[in-house]
Length: 192
Image (cartoon, rainbow, N blue to C red; front, side, top):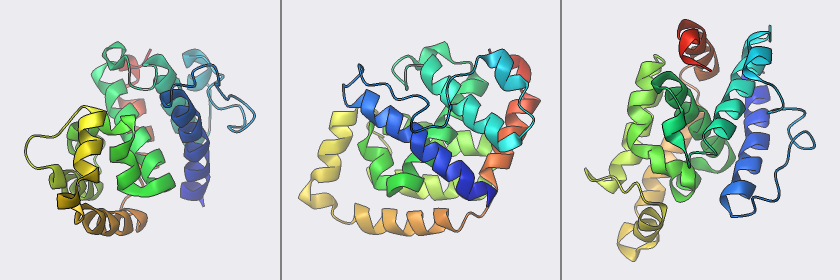
């Protein structure tokens, strides 16, 4: 149940991110679709007593802090880890690994495995590694380059591999929301 609630909240946040990443920066949805997500300061986030709400609010806060990945250098290493895990969760739960890699969130795909390892989610890290491996050893960080590779007739097998990864991911081998919460709390000093 908690996973479903987090997924629904992540979908709302993802929709906001998609609108922004599609160049429609004048359309920033807050409150209407997200139920208030993203309206809190960092100090207010620390006051939240529900673990899953805290994770969701932190994920959105970090997304805004780095302008949905455009200014990722604004994030500390711990914040970047949560941002990467949070966006992957939202993208995959909404449209699978294909959506993740197609969208700007996929610019951080080369960091997926390490980010999930950092929060202790080794099984999910392995799923991400398999999904990312379709690009070979030279992961394309540029969205257009990645999209061109994905759309190539030579790469029709990507969908089969990502479908397997989606299925593995949707079995939820680990409670990544709880792992994100513990990581955030263990590294609280690195979140600002």
